[in-house]
Structure formats: structure tokens, C-alpha cells
Length: 196
Image 1 (cartoon, helix red, strand yellow):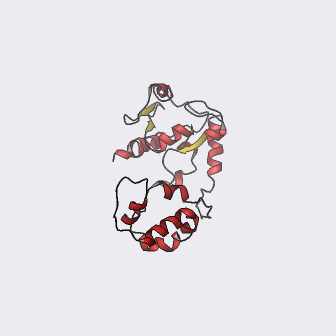
Image 2: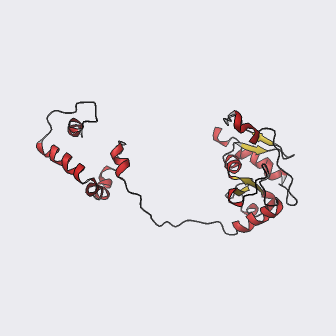
Image 3: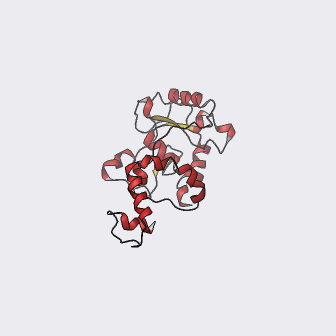
């Protein structure tokens, strides 16, 4: 590779000065038809899988996006859980009152993987907009038993964003209010989990 560095005018190091004629031919051939080299990558990857790939601009520019099929697990009856929370919170985010369904998530207080019996319990859910849902899921915010919002000191809030977090409380839903035991679990186990 050091031989090729000597041929590349965009690299400021000299590389090895004794590059061969075939190095120059490979260099010219690559830039004449780079996609033909990309088709050979799958054959070369097993050889170099322990070696870090170069991160120069050519690798990023020439990689091709391809659709692949994957088998994924889905959460059975998650839609039922979401519908119950939509009914409880009257279709609005529990913090911001945003009523755009595409922006709302049915957030589990006690995570799905933690308690099988609580997965579809509407008292284990809060309807939140996507931003607060992400912060709640990542342990950057949590709620007290009185539904007041607790914000981690480790969340960096610019002045313009503070009204969306500071001094806020969750509205008390018309039914299926969050269970204090689930809220306590979130405070004790999920809040600021990134620090542990």
C-alpha cells in the first residue's frame, strides 16, 4: 500500500519510491473502472477481516447501498398496548400534549425484556413523543411518583430546549395511571444507567 501512496497526488507523504510498473498499471486500472474492483471485495474480505479497512474517501464513495432481507422479531400485541395508551392519554403525549400519532410512542416504563407479565399492562406505559421517549428509554429522564419529570444532570440542554424538559409533569391519564412500582423500578434501574 505504501507503493500506492507514492502514486496518489492527494496524499502528502511520499510513500515508497520504488513502486513497480505493475503498481502504476493497477492504479490506472482502478480509477478507470473502480466498480470492477468492488465486485472482488467479497472474495478478499475473509482474508482481511482482522485488518481495519481504510477509511479514505474512495471506500465511502464507491460502496453501493444494497437491500437485504433479514429476519426480525416483532412484539406480538404491541399494537394493543399502544391503543390502550392512546385511549388513556386521549391521543396526546403525556408531557407536551402533541397529538400527531406519527410522533408518539407507547413507552414501556419497565422495559419489555425485563418483565414478561408487565409487557401489555397499560399501567406500565406512558404515551410520549419520540424525543421524550428516546430520552426515557436511554435513562436521561424519569418520573417521580407524583408524575413530575426528573431530568438527568448529564443531558446537555441548550436554552431553547429547556422548556421542553424543565418543570414539566406527566398529565394524569383518564385511566391506567402509571403504577408507582413501575416508576420506582425505572428510577432505580433505568435512570442514568449509562453511568453504571
